[in-house]
Image: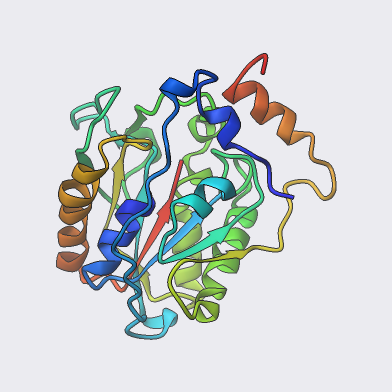
Length: 155
Length: 99
């Protein structure tokens, strides 16, 4: 039985509890080509960024960072303040599996990683802005990169 | 994350969410989602175990042809440490100490 996270993640005070939001879009796009020929982009809600990029704000930040795929992990900073981030700070691969994606490309399981990946904050309560602004911008970036599949890993 | 997946998918780019928080994944459906029964914050496995990270990613991608409709959540047949679920105590203490 899966671990019940929501009772723990929400504050005990019912007045402060956040209700998960479901999208009304319900789109389902077919994959345009076989996985072995596909370009795949990683998206993470871990609020990772290059040390040279602006820091993420602690709350309600709907910005994102575009990060070159092959940048060394030592150039990256995790702004996410989650208490579950201890292992990601040791090895970012546990939430952003760039090496795994590269390995699957070498094995011809996938075509190739996209030349950039994308990072933003998780748990943003401003849902209309998340869909209308953040997601719309990310979709534009993915189309520009010619991505065939977006792989999203929540933090 | 599901809001972003839905909007990206609506723009014509197929998506796959790989997550560990199944109760949230059920309430906020993504077009396609794979559930990994691993502790939150370690979706692809423990640190410094690249073979395991690749196994999780490969297993999730191999499920892609099995998605036939919007909102499906498919379970990966992987466990963090066999039948030992001591990680639940660790996660509980991380997220809500004392609760």
